Amino acid sequence: MFQPDLLRGKRILVTGGGTGLGRAISHRFAELGASLVLCGRRGEVLESTAAAIAGETGVPVETAVCDVRSGEAVDAMVERLWATAPIDILINNAAGNFLARTHLLSHRAVDAVLNTVLHGTAYCTIACGKRWIEGGRPGTVLSVLTLSALQGAPFTVPSAMAKAGVLAMTKSLAVEWGRHGIRLVAVAPGPFPTPGAWQQLMPEDRQTAPLARSIPLGRYGEHAELANLCTFLVSDQAGYITGEAVVIDGGKRHLGGAGPSDLLEWTDEQWGKLRS
Ligand SMILES: CCCCCCCCCCC/C=C/C(=O)SCCNC(=O)CCNC(=O)[C@H](O)C(C)(C)COP(=O)(O)OP(=O)(O)OC[C@H]1O[C@@H](n2cnc3c(N)ncnc32)[C@H](O)[C@@H]1OP(=O)(O)O
Ligand SMILES: NC(=O)C1=CN([C@@H]2O[C@H](COP(=O)(O)OP(=O)(O)OC[C@H]3O[C@@H](n4cnc5c(N)ncnc54)[C@H](OP(=O)(O)O)[C@@H]3O)[C@@H](O)[C@H]2O)C=CC1
Image 1 (tube, rainbow, N blue to C red):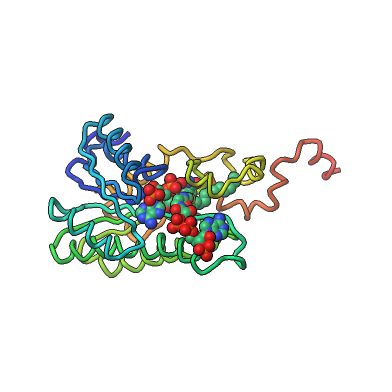
Image 2: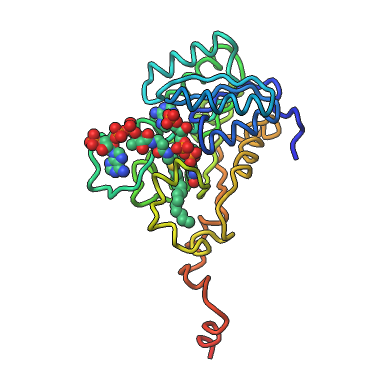
């Protein structure tokens, strides 16, 4: 589907690259020749993923233990990485989220999500952006949003707020940094099962709802589908796309326009009865 060397020569930093979607995206980048740096808080998780990806693809995979909630830690990580070679592409994927009734959230609970998703993304983006601009180098930032950035999401309000902020950053910096050859793009996925997201957001009680009610294509996303979209967006083939967020959700976002979703499961008999 892609040229096998599409990302050769690109050095890519993936936050949250040790697990879930970050891992799947990283794996695809490596298959296409990119060299990788995977960042996260847990060194052993990063090492295990890096070894697996390097073993399967033969490309170098570095790791960087860093809590993106700390601006100082992010600056130190990026400074250290740049000392070896500049990063060409940043993937803002690290996130925290949980289901909760918003009026009961403590300040620390709100901060745990906002600091990771909104502040962490800003710290990583600015740390790379300033080095690209000062060094006269082009760069690309891809941020992983959620559908909630576009349409809100009850019971995961700090995440929706933070991701909406990241979308605003994407559009704003596309304009401010465009003349430096820096592109900012985003993806807004619907549900893609991962252990991390399912543990936080899909308790057993929620897993019985029929998929067809909430996703027009009737299935969850596959990791490879998201990874391929990200690959295209960060590649030079997408060099004229900036400030955009691409939704990848099996049509979930448009369900509201289809009317009440229970109608999707009506039988011919039910429709016949209505007509008569
Ligand atoms: C077809 C049907 C569709 C259904 C939809 C399916 C889902 C679709 C996907 C939607 C989009 C997904 C977005 C995602 O981001 S998924 C990513 C999930 N991954 C993670 O969250 C991994 C990282 N997460 C964490 O590290 C933690 O969860 C946390 C964010 C909480 C941060 O951890 P940390 O160790 O720093 O924080 P603490 O545990 O010390 O907690 C800090 C305060 O937060 C309070 N807290 C924690 N959890 C909860 C909770 N569940 N409810 C309320 N409050 C919570 C905690 O008590 C601390 O506050 P206090 O000190 O005041 O007690
Ligand atoms: N799965 C889904 O259905 C959807 C996911 N998304 C988005 O996709 C991305 C990946 O989610 P997913 O793979 O499902 O979930 P995961 O829980 O697997 O991924 C979250 C990653 O972020 C890292 N991380 C969390 N907090 C920090 C921090 N403070 N500093 C550095 N790294 C951190 C975690 O590693 P560690 O704990 O070691 O730090 C982990 O690798 C997120 O941005 C999420 O919002 C969007 C829509 C749908």
